[in-house]
Length: 400
Image 1 (spheres, one colour):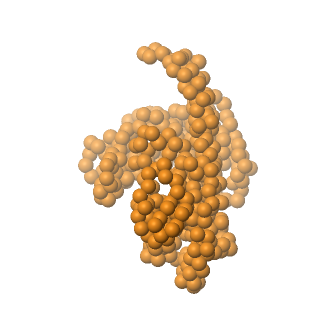
Image 2: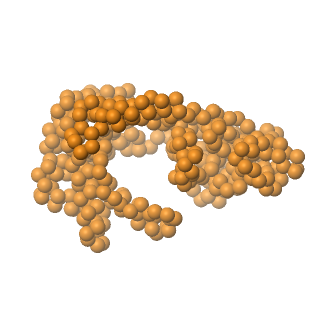
Image 3: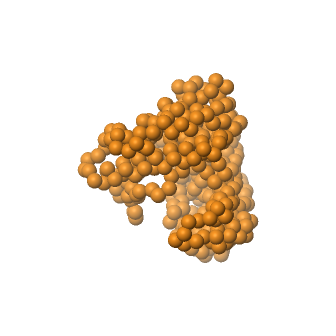
């Protein structure tokens, strides 16, 4: 599935109607959650049928396209099914019980309720809200795909404007020559990651340079806020500037993680990394800001995404004892966070992060043989797997 995004250019009245459609979609989603809470044995198709009942009861809900109403019901069911799955898997902690949402940011249409112009540069919404024709601003060319391949159109409101996303049914595959290389990655705060070859990538820390301006903008918002009164236009403007600044930082972080992940995938055939639980790590209030700014999870998501596109192997391994165990003899060498050099009784002296990266790669190689996923099929397609692993292990020993 490909997702192409365009910025929408229209009139203020059209933007207001988009906001109304977003609120309606959120209303239907919350009503479906309430219907599930009040009635037992409610399934996915029951929620879809309930959309028709809502359209007959509420005139503003009837304005929204029927498939857009079903898409909102699908969102409600995804939250419910995720809760059921977490309960079946006995996930520790909170199971993600479906909650009512106060704010919505998007509305999704399926195969009806919209149409594209012949030159594919204008999008027309045809439901009863009457949003009309909107200009698409972007670099993607939709002429390469048939209209039947566009399965969904999503309208999104962000701090800097309104956007349209086209979900296209297309399997993206890029085949490249084998590099005969494999690495383990140990992510950190001082360096974004250190690989098993000793190479390091600096942590960009996009939030830190912007903190001063963010604090100044937040102070302006706080000064103009009036509790219990109608907020002024100056408050709305200050709030908008703050949101745009946060959006810029998040886009910088996303762009960095995407480009770096693609570079790592193109340069290696197997990438092993830690299966970190970031949501548990940010509970440490002394490191929460730095961990969130590093975007480790976003980097992992892009690694797995590009791994499937390029046909490369990505292996997530348990992070336990990767920093403590010696990569040469396997003995435990306990260290504090301030200890940055690994010194073992066997004589190995190595950077702490490099030692951890080698251990991660070793664990990854021990996992690949019995994963039972597409990764094993990709390895078998290379031919002589044992000879390949032996040659790479020899190179790894030389690098140590």
